[in-house]
Length: 180
Image (cartoon, rainbow, N blue to C red; front, side, top):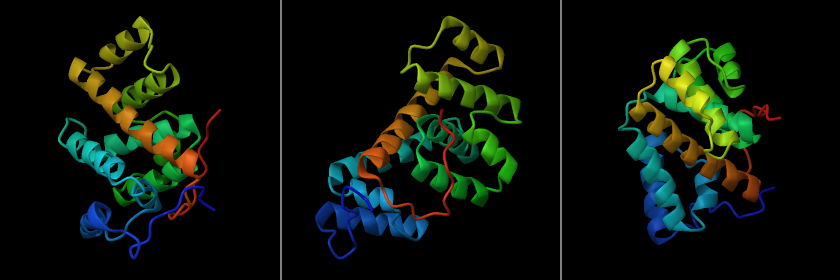
């Protein structure tokens, strides 16, 4: 059971109610993570805003989901592992590739470089080594790509940590994260 309430539709008022309406229009339901974040509508708005803004970056949805899976795996976030596995499956990513991404790898060389860097950024709290950047650049990542990786990691750390604090009830088919 969640340690922070998951705001119901009936209890949502003001900004939270408006955001719930927008979320339902976009995805058909309000995931429990957003219901937890709605305890502070400004936090929910920020969470949605960074996701929407990063959607305008260079990475396609499958790549952003690959980062989300890798960070969820690195941080042991079962909620995000479950949610992003379901989203990735809806994007036609094969089950084996989803599991690989959750473990911080990919069969696609570019995505592999991206998720490896994402895990390094996460695990080192941004203090990546020179050789980590050199490896990313050798794999074809531009400076813009590297900045976008960091932004996506930050977005996913926010959701991972909120789920850890709240112990959010998982409302997707459960997938266990493979954190060390």
